[in-house]
Amino acid sequence: MSTAPSGRRPRPNVVGTAVLSVLALYFLLPAWWLLVASTKSSSDLFGSNGFWFSSFRLGDNLRELASANDGLYVRWMLNTLLYAGVGAAGATLFAAMAGYALAKFRFRGREAVFNTVLAAVLVPAPLLALPVYLLLSKAHLVDTVWAVLLPSMISPFGVFLSRIYAEASVPDEILEAARMDGAGEFRIFFTVVLRILSPALVTVFLFQFVTIWNNFFLPLVTLSDQKLWPVNLGLYYWNGLKDHTPYNLVVTGSLVSVLPLVVAFLLLQRFWRADLAAGGVKA
Image 1 (cartoon, rainbow, N blue to C red):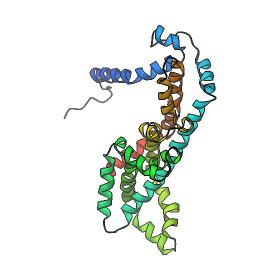
Image 2 (image 1 turned 30 degrees about the vertical axis):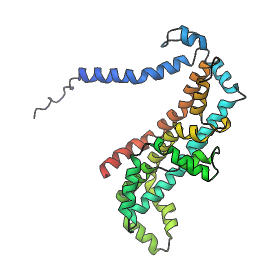
Image 3 (image 1 turned 120 degrees about the horizontal axis):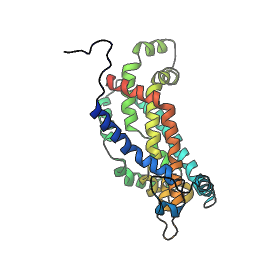
């Protein structure tokens, strides 16, 4: 195998760099269009270059967005934060408990339960929307906050990742030592296991947060009250208004709605990137 002489820099891969640059441009173009379009009025959206600025009225669009329909957009954003934040936190806790139990406790049917969880990972969420709606209807929870929160607290992928991480990272010796000191199972889980699993749980939380934030079909089926809608359902409603669609508000609202996701990825990227790599090795 030939090696480059010491002191000489490797030759750049021109073809690879060009391909990656084209792909990066392809993925960044929609974000650039959204940023530019959010600074325009509704008339400029259709009468000017879509990829460059014309009249810069981002501030006016934001003020109009916040005051439209008595601040309904702000209500939609708060609803989305509630659904995504509480739902992701609950799903992470339940996934950690289930994954830890499947990894460290021996009981009959354990592998069958885990295989069922693996199968659930492959089932598209929209296929479950109708059965979930029927269950919620029986429990008289349709058109309430719980119609979105309760289904959001289930994460088969979180259970899968938590089990893999718990098997590789939680030593049996620590658990036995804690039991010999008189600690109960719940105390061991909340004071010892959760700290060890925290890198994996950040990944579970982030993925579930994004999934709930982008969830559209379940709220569409279960919620009819506009004040309970998440932001993506509200923007879809505005975009479908006949004769007076506020296109500038739809575009500006779309830009504002993705900002929390960008912030979450930037703040948590060092955890989930490292954890995904570790999980791949441990799996």
